[in-house]
Length: 447
Image (cartoon, rainbow, N blue to C red; front, side, top):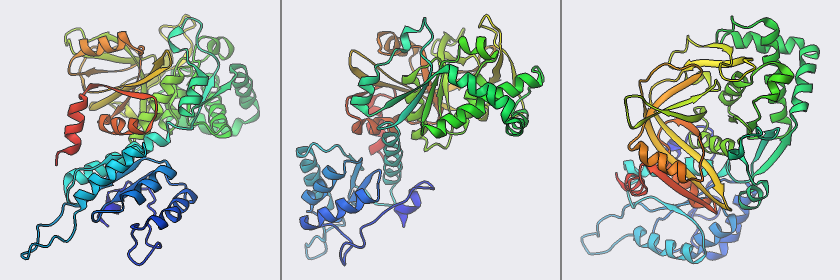
C-alpha cells in the first residue's frame, strides 16, 4: 500500500500474486511465466523488492528477457532474535542479485537498503518511475520534422540513420508546403473549428494588435499541426519556423508552438530534431505535469557573472508566465518580415533544469544542469534569467560541445532523474554541469 501510494496518478502496477501462494518469484522454473506476463501487459519498468537472500538468478532471467528499466531494493533487516536467529538477509540478497545482473549485462537501479517508510525509499522509487518514463519517451519514438533546417543553421544538422539505429528514434519528414496548403484549406473549409480555436486563443493572451484574419491564420496552423501530430503518431515536433513560413502565410508560428507544447507535445524551433528529443525527455522527466520551454542561451547577465538570459523570439508556453494576466501577441522584432505571431512575456520564478541531447562523430551525450531564476533587464519576446553555479564552466562545456545555443528547459530539479534514465539508453553519455555526478549520487543515497 505504501508503494502504491507513492506512484503518480495514471501509473498502473501489475503484481505477481497469481504466481503462487506467496505471490513471490523464488523458483527459476517460474521465471518464464513472469516474463510472458510482463511482456503481454506491455510494462515499462520492473520493480524487484527482495524479501530475503536468494532468487538472484530468477530476477536476472526476467530482467534480461523483458528488457525494461529495473529497480532492486530490500527492506532493512531486523536485528537477530535473542536466540541469535536472523529471520532474513535481504541486503545480502541484493549483493548477490547485482552481481548476476552484471554478468548478464543487464542495467539496473537500486535504492539503498532502507525501510519502506524512509525518505530515501520514497525519493528513490519516485526518481526511478520518472527515469523509466524518460526511457519510454526516448527509445522508439517518432519526431515530426516540418521542413529542413534554415539554410544557415549547420548547427542543427542531424544524422537520421544514427538516431534510428542507436536509439530507435524515427524522424518523420513533413513538407512545409503541405502545412501551408492544409492551413489555407482549413481557413476556408473548417470555419467553425477555426473560430472555436481563435476564440480560445483570445482567452489566453492579448491579440488586439492582430486583425481577425491574422488570428484565423494562426488558429488554422494550430488546427493543422495538431492533426498531423495525431495522424502520424508523433511525440514531438521540430518546426522550420522561419523564414519561408512568413513568405507563404505571413505569420510566425511561435504562439502555435507554445500552445502545442503546453498541450503535451514539445515543439522545437528551427527544425532542431535534437532539441525536440531534449524537450521530450525533459517533459517525460516531470511525468508531463509541467511544460518545457525551448530556449536560446543568448547573453550573460549584465551584472551577475553566473547568470544567463534564456530567450526565444516568442515560443515559451503561456502556462509558465510570471503573470497569468499579462502577455500579448505581436510582430517579430528580429526577422525582416516582421510577421505577426510572436509571444511577449516573462516567465515565472523557480528552479530550472536545462538539458541538451546532442552528438557529433557518432558520439552522443546529454548535457544536464540546474539553476534558479533571477531578476534581469527587460527584453522583447519570451524570456527569463537563470543563475547557475559556475557559468564560465557551463560556457566551456557548450563551446567544446557537442552542444549548441539551443537548450530545453523545465521548472523543477530533474538531474537525478535524467542521470538514472541514461543507465538504460545505450550510447548516450550523461554529462552533468551542476549538480555534479557525485552530488547526484549522494542525493539519491541520503535519507
